[in-house]
Amino acid sequence: MTKGELKYEGKAKKVYATDNPETYIVEYKDDATAFNAQKRGTIANKGIVNNAVTSRLFTYLASFDVPTHFIEQLSEREQLVKAVKIIPIEVIVRNKTAGSFAKRYGVEEGIVLTPTVLEWCYKSDALGDPPLNDVTAIALGLASPDELETMMDLAMDINDGLITFFANRGLELIDFKIEFGKLPSGEIILADEISPDTCRLWDTASGERMDKDRFRRDLGNVEGAYQEVFKRVMGDANA
Ligand code: TMP
Ligand code: ASP
Image (cartoon, rainbow, N blue to C red):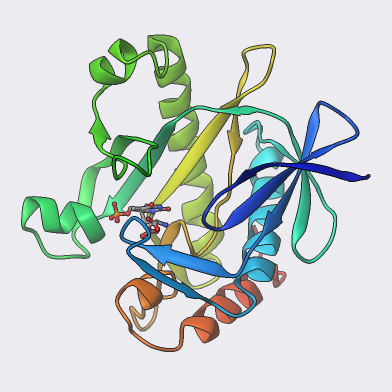
């Protein structure tokens, strides 16, 4: 598989064309940003952890029929994926209050949300990823009503799968962000990544933060937490 032209460089990954127009190579970087890139740094070996964790999780999700862009892991930092057009909507699922939700509504972190909350944000760094509701997303032409429904159903299935996966590894899934892509056929599939950059994971026993909040909030031992998540996810606990 030859790596072609750089198609896109994001904050944490680079996407390259390949000699097959139906596939891309994604390369995971150690660069870390927070608060719409106002805070910048690197987390040693984060790219290796996030590539491995995403590869493992996407394979797991595919095993119960969640369609994903993942094809195979190529190297420590690279994976081969199906070429999709990313739908510019960040889909956030929240099981417990945390982060911007806790701040926005003036509630403590760690309160169970019933029902599970699903939020849409417009994926735009220039605008700081502003929130969207269904009607706004449709009126802006970002997705059709059917596409929103598909993304919502898939997001809830993914949440159910991930809660169990992480619980079996002593981690509580507090919330996460996912992105979907569209194939030329119009099919919507899970794309981007699922990693400690894009999930909040709290150690079940101690409540310790095991995710990017350690970087965002200067909690220390950022690399250690990423390595611990890597160890637990790659270990052979029951899925
Ligand atoms: P939030 O509470 O800051 O809105 O974050 C909700 C979840 O989404 C959390 O698991 C972190 C993840 N997230 C991203 O993956 N990318 C982002 O740019 C932001 C703001 C959050
Ligand atoms: N990655 C995002 C940014 O730099 C924010 C975050 O994950 O907190 O804006």
